[in-house]
Length: 286
Image (cartoon, rainbow, N blue to C red):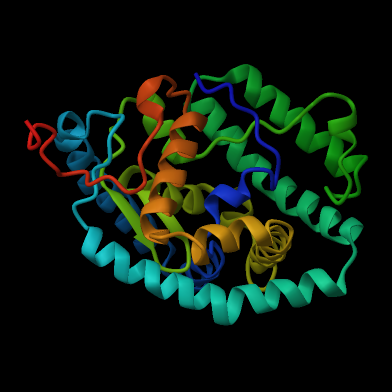
C-alpha cells in the first residue's frame, strides 16, 4: 500500500499551477440542489475514464508520457499561466505580505485538518487500516486539543498526517494512470487523478453534511492555504512557469515524476526528460 507521508505544503511547489477555483466552482454547483446528479455524473465519468485508462496502460508503459491531448493541454496551460500572473500571484503576494508566517501556518493546519476525514475514507478503501486509525486519532486529538485543528499537537506526538486521495485509491485498485491532462485553474493531472478529484469532493464528509454557508469554510481555508504556499514557493514556481524554455513540458515532467513517486513507483523509469517527444520513434537515428 502507499506509505508516503506528506506535509500540508511541502510538495506544493511541484504542483505549482493554480489549484484554487475549481474546488469553489464544484462546491457552488453541488450546493444548487444538484447533489444526486453530481454523484451520478461522477460515477459515469469515472467509469468512462477508467475504461480509457485500462486500454492505454500498455501504450503508456507506466514510466513514459501519454499525452494525446497535448494541443488542448497547452492552451489550458497558457490560460493557467495568465491566471497565475494576473490573479493568483498578485493575490498571494498581498496575502503573504499582510500576514505573518505563524498566521499562515495556522490556516494551513486548519485546511489540512478538514481534509483528514477524506484521508481516512481512502485509507480504508486502500486497506490501510493502520493509517486510517492514525489519521482518525490525529483528527480527534487536533479537534479537541488543537482548537478545531488550528493547532497541531498531533505532530508533536509523532502522529503525522498520511495523505490519501481517490486517485491514489484507484492506483491501488489497479487502474492505469491514463492520459496526462491539464485542468483549468487546477493544473497538471491525469485521467485517473481527475476522476479522483471529483470523487474525493463527493465523498468529503464536510462537503456532504454541511450546508451553505458553512459548506464553503473548507474551500476558503483551502484557498488561503494555497495562496500561502504560492507565496512561500514563489521563486520555485516562477522559475518553472516563467524561466523554463518550455514551461508546459517542465510542468508535465515535474508533476508525473512527483505523482509516481508519491504512489510508490520507483526506478529508472521515474526520470522523465521534460523536452522529449512522447511519440517520437526511438530508432529514427539508426
